[in-house]
Structure formats: C-alpha cells, structure tokens
Image 1 (tube, rainbow, N blue to C red):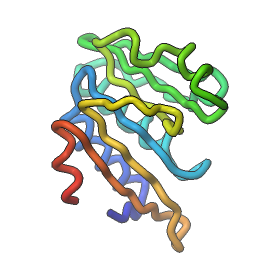
Image 2: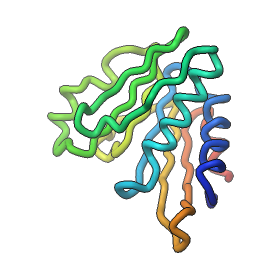
Image 3: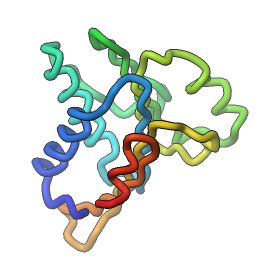
Image 4: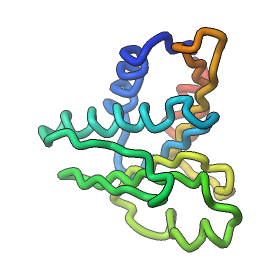
Length: 149
C-alpha cells in the first residue's frame, strides 16, 4: 500500500483506531524519520477523540523508552526500543508482564521474540517520491485480515 500524503496516513490511522481494542499490540518498523511516530500520534489522537477526551501532544519516546496515555477505558503504552541493545534490557521494561488493560504500540520491536496473539505489524518504507511511504502490513489474530491487503 502506498501512502501519498500525511492526510492519507491520518486516514489510515483512523481505520486502525476504529478497530483496535485493549490488549492489542502494534509493531512499527522502518528507518529513522519514516513516520512511525507520526502514525502513532494520529492513532492516539483518534482514540482520544473517539472517547471525547482532549487530544494531547504525542512525542517520540526514544529517550524515555515509554510514554503512557490514559484513556477512560484503557491505557496506551507507546514504546521506542531503538536504544535497547539486548534482551536483558528489554526484559527490564516488562512490556508483556503487566497491564493487560492496555494497547501497546512499539517502535523498533526487533528484540521481541515472543508470540503475540493480537498483533499488527506495520512496516514503513521510503519510496522515490519523498512525500510518499510504502506500508507493508502483517497481522495475527483478528488482524490477519490485513495480510490480504
């Protein structure tokens, strides 16, 4: 799938927001600056609007590793694992050891090797036109339907 503009990326994130539920997990991969955090910002803001909450600024958690957003019915946990070097560092975060009442959005998830039942992987790539991105989708559980796109 080719995304031709920020508006189209925003529309794509709204479709995900309309379908996502607590306990779901989103893996975001792609080069630095390709749009992982922008997609996350749009998604979180759509979820906030959907429940009637004020939209907040969504920043990249590259240095903090995690930002949390409390919604009325669940929490969103936005991780950026770019700086992690090994499984031991990953384990200290306890990503899958707590808070089943959360949506987890994980940038740079390559260290995660455990199976996750309800997961969507979104890989963003640069293409020749600098304003466009190629999205590759892979889903498990209810997200398997995306494998056909």
